[in-house]
Image 1: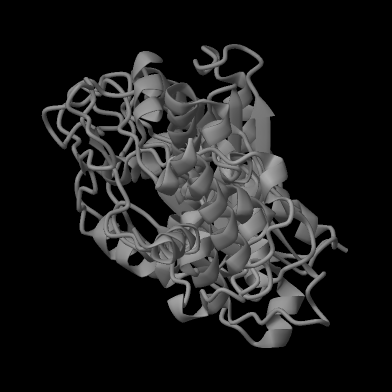
Image 2: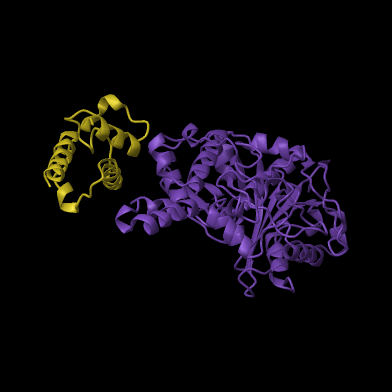
Length: 411
Length: 83
């Protein structure tokens, strides 16, 4: 008999705070986390804004040597993981260390480390390259360091599915726990791509807003949207089999009730025009849920012309006329696009939505787009009791990944 | 130039947060200073930058303690000064 899968802990490092609580209170206050780029000198760049995780100090979560030899995305991941385990009050010991696993993904891995060492290579030659380039660069360094730090010794793997990464990490862990492979898993995503090559690359791909003169240009679903604002950080959740959590008597924060993942098989960056696979992903996530029960959609909502239109169409295909009655919001309007971390942070936000009965808004929404005509919770948070929410993530490479998150009830 | 102080600085650079009092001539790089195989390469790079010389892999083979590093650096500098 499959287990129900519940959330008993979470942690986050985001442009709006160095914890879930700080991030959540800023989100529902409609605070904008976007600001001028300070991670590097962006004066020669067309894009000069980003959602940076400000005042983050890795040494609060790890020793200085580990911090020095960890890329920023790994530092984020370890920090969020320790927050999640602390909230879940789980203690790893000799008896249970193989009962738990880790899936922490990253869209781009240690891009900053790679960039720095390529500069060393070009300027000073191969014999001056740091031996840490490989472990610091690889995407699974986040899950590896988290395993070392937590001593969780079961499944330990990264997930790479671009901007769907965090959602897919949770989805895979959901399935592993549901079918009894593990009692609990630490899952999520982390990225730190606000680097020279990261910003240059996403700019050249046409993905980022060029309106660099204002901090208001992450404007999902708005008629004047013209690209996303890059963000950084991590989101990590502790998922548990219900019976395991219940036996520990730990407060349950939400339930993961479905996961759907499909591929467009269409284009390396563009979403498919017909939206068939996006539609299917939502339908799969709702296979054991009545679609009528969905009361909130946390959108992928990147603020790119293509994503927001395509996502709106997909939502309408799945829910028909009822789509107009389901609030849809994009927290990327406040955080920017945290890439591999985005889906994990958005799943955490859905857990908060079902607990608190408050919907975070889509800020910077000024000019309605006639084709994006759903209720995007514009500019102000809204009180609404939500029993069932879905969280959409879509990624370069044609990934469509959707989670269903429910308020936890005993029945 | 105080060689020992400069070696200490290089070790502190690759092992931030280390208790400097542990960096004594008899200290083992691996056991006492917790410098692993990757850290040894980082330390080599730091020493090269500090003293402006190159170290070959074979020159590092017998290096176990801080005093081994001191001897190696002294001998490299002596060769250079005599050249």
